[in-house]
Amino acid sequence: MSDNQHLPPAALDAWLAAAAAEIGVTDDDVEVTTETTRIVLHAAKLVARNVARPAAPLSTFLLGVAVGSAGDPQALKALADQLGTLALGWEARAEPSSNETSQPQNEG
Image 1 (tube, rainbow, N blue to C red):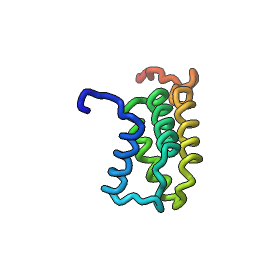
Image 2 (cartoon, helix red, strand yellow):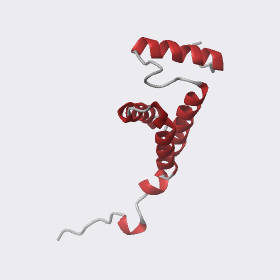
Image 3 (cartoon, rainbow, N blue to C red):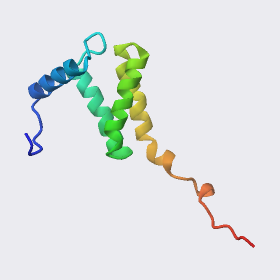
Image 4 (tube, rainbow, N blue to C red):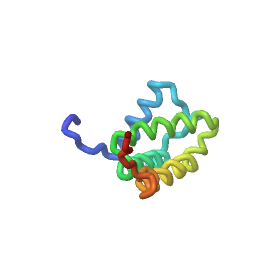
């Protein structure tokens, strides 16, 4: 699959199950389901489109850390929603207001 083909859902599920097992993630940590996958991919999409593409995998990493820190696998949806809301407002938040534009200072 080195030609950038999309994985069919069954192959994606198989990959995620194998990856979870390899790194020691169990259903007690978080249940990897089609809904879980949809939530994480949606958050990644919002970050990629509204912040920057490289921010998507890094943000989903942070999302995973946050879910783990919460100690509640059910926290995923709420945390992903928070991340998505931040991403959707990022452009406006990152733009300096007209009062904050930097002006060259005269020294002398």
